Each structure stands twice: as C-alpha cells, then as structure tokens.
Image (cartoon, rainbow, N blue to C red; front, top):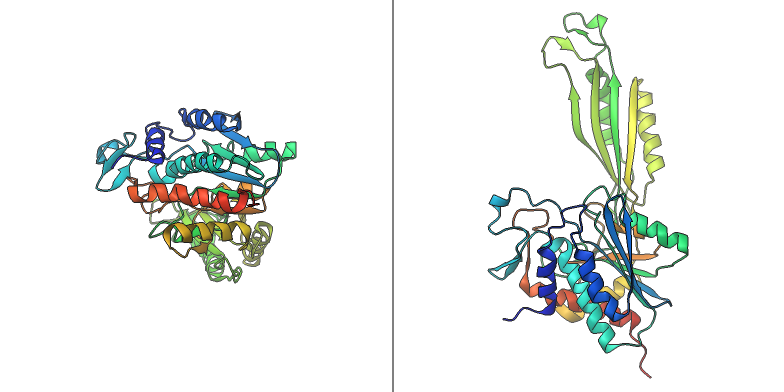
Length: 381
C-alpha cells in the first residue's frame, strides 16, 4: 500500500536525529509546510533550544497544537533491529526513535491542518503551533519560554491539544486532561560518627530517622479528587555508612518525591514534611526541587470535541486520565484554560525499537482534523 502523506512526513521527521535538545531541522520542515498555509512562523531560540510559534489568524478562539521535536537518546544502536534514525516499515509497524513520542503526532497535526484549511478556508478563530526541542530534557528553555513570551505580548489561548502518546491499549482509549505535579526533596539527617562498640559516644542518624520515615510513608497526604488518585510520597534513594561494619555513620542522605494532585499544594506538602521531621527532633537539612505543578482541565468543550472525534473516527469511547509523568501541558495550562493531551499508544516509547502501528497514523490525523472541525469550522448558512 502506498504510504500516506502523514506517514511520509513522519518518516522524514524520524530521519532527523533530533536527540534533545537538538532540533536538527525538524521545525524548519514544519515551517516549510505551515507558511504556505498562511501561518506566521516565529523561531524563538533560548540557550541552544529551538522553539517554534506559528499562528494563522488573529481572532478568537485560538486553537493550539503543541508538541516537541526532540527525542530521547536511542541507547545502544546495535540492540535495535533497524537503525533508530532510519525509519523502517516492518510487520505492520513503523520503527524509529520518536515514532510514537512524538513525531507521529506532529506529522498528523500538520496534515490535519492542511486538510482542514483546504476544506474550510474561512474557518473561525485562529490555529497555532507551539513546538519545542526541550521537552525530553530539563524543559527550562522550551515551552515555558514560549508561554512567557506569549503572556508578555498579551496573546490569549483558548484550547490546546498536546500530542503526547496517551493511548494505553488501542488508539483513542485514553486522553489526559491533567497531570500530577512533581516535588522532590533531598534530605540529609545529621548524626555523630563513632565506633559501633561505643554507641554512647555517637548518634546514629539511621536510627533517628527511621521513625520519621515510617510516619512519612504512612501519612495520608490527601484523598485525591474526581480526577486524581491520592498524592503519593516515595523514597527513590537512601544512603548511609562508610562501608565498614564497625562504624556508626555521621549522616544519612535520602531522596524522595511527591507526585501530587490539585488536592494538595507544594507549599502545603513542604510544611507538613518539615512538621513531621521537627516533631521527631531530627538535626537535618532539606533541599526542595519543584519540577512541575499539577494542572487539570475539567470535562468541557475541548475534551468533548476530542472525545466525539475519537468516537466518530474509531468507534472508541475514550477515558479521561491524569496518570503518568509530567508534560509541557503544565506550562501551557498557566495561559490556556483548556489543555488536553492525546496521541498514539505509549507502550514502546523511550524503548529500544520504538514504533507506531501503521494502521494508526492516518486515523490519528483524522481525529485531529475532526477536532478542528468541531471547534473552528464555520457555521453552515
């Protein structure tokens, strides 16, 4: 079967080895396709990161497609069945780094716009693209920078569809209407080092910290809400000791993380952790890192339009979910009231032999186009 336009564009993007934070010409490829459609394309660079803001139209509502051209490193290339940056069709799948995360979505978005604009040249409102090469990395010079620029200029957004790979088992079964926040802590509990045979001359930080850690692990931080499971506190690393079996260590270091919902706040969690540690009389230092706030888009216009598009195209009843890690939706949600994520199945993302099933590529494009039609197609006279 002859490859579709969406598939060919996807293969062109996969062939560009845009390992984060590099773009390797992906966004120039998009500009070459969007500019002839009437998009005003602006490249915003920040500390080696390439960002694209492209907009067609000057009126509201503003519908934004958002995504990233950077990919994670492929890992050992010899473990791939085919080269990670040589798009390869095999057994009904298209293989290559970024196939699902998330160059398929970007290709589908562009072709969906081509088809929608051809059918509705006088469409309502505006269509925009917010594309970065800094999503898989620290995410400090990507989407957040573009959002700050838009806010400074007073540009308002109404709807944003982020192309993250959200589907679990089949295309369309899951869309994300929010993400949990991520708050990490590096805790150092201070003791007094000494000979293990003379514990009265030392202070064991492991023994001192254990009751506090047990309380932190058992604490109910919140009950969650309609869209979120309860907030979770998890230890990721813990270390103490010199390696000798006759030395009481002088300190214990521990890394932990909260994945928290809109039922809690970062400041509230911070205060409660300190209260528990203080109650146990620990001598400690605690450094916090807030890498993302939670965001939530309640069921509404955008999720309804996307859900209807999935139903019409695939006959699949989608489910709203807030599971998974952080995404750039957390930045966009600060300036856009409705942010929804939807893309291909995520089973192979970040793995050796990442792929997308060929049968999903054009339906993904059609769902994006149908969503545009529901929100921006002109009313029939």
